[in-house]
Image 1 (tube, rainbow, N blue to C red):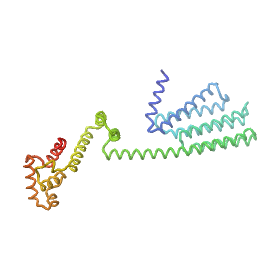
Image 2: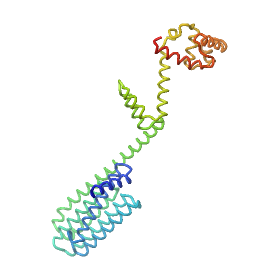
Image 3: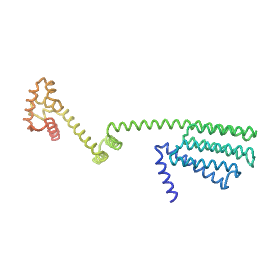
Image 4: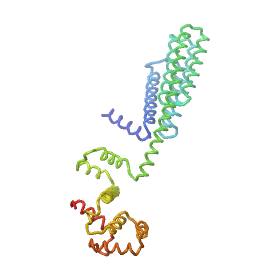
Length: 337
């Protein structure tokens, strides 16, 4: 139960601090590194591991203090993860150098193994920096680490140290190059995602729809035989304004489609050819002067024809002729006339 609560709190913390997947990854790696450092150094300080001499313990205290301080500053939003990580690993490398020089001078039992162990600590620090995409610091840690190790190997003239120098050099160099490539690629991906998000936002703003509404349109358009449930689902995902706009657009499309593909003479058999021509232009939204120009008539003649159309089709004088014709056209079309 306690572990589950702790896990939930960590998840909530990560969500509150992370804006994207890369941020979440960095937070997890940094917290994992901090937990390992605190755990290992605490074991050394209570005498359960590591060198128990005063100087190595002092170096451990410095490292632990820096880790806790950086963690606190990050929690209070004073520094970012790259800064906190760089601070901790640089101080860690300084303590590693101090311990190695101490082992060279004091020559405790198994001091060569202790030197190897501290070099591995530097290697792990570089690996954690690479995993969190920190810039430049891995190279700095590698330079300090290899310079220290090489100087100690030359000073002691120990074949065992020289035999592993090329290994540490190759691994640390590889990690640094790999980390830089990963960091750049992740940066490019973030830029592409940001650009894509901006384009998506601009598109949604242009069409005045949200993501849910676009998804509804796409689902409906991809279905060759939509069911009533599909239609209900579409309208349930739309805002009221979008519902009205869609209905009006469909209504206008149907009216224009019927107008363009219908023989008006069959729908309105009582109208003459001249009246049908005027009627067709009225349905297209043409004004009186435009109709006159297209049919080579005066506006007065067009007005007379409009009056005849109203009388033959029984259109009330207070009714908009174009709107009435459209409604009548749709009605008769669906009645099979």
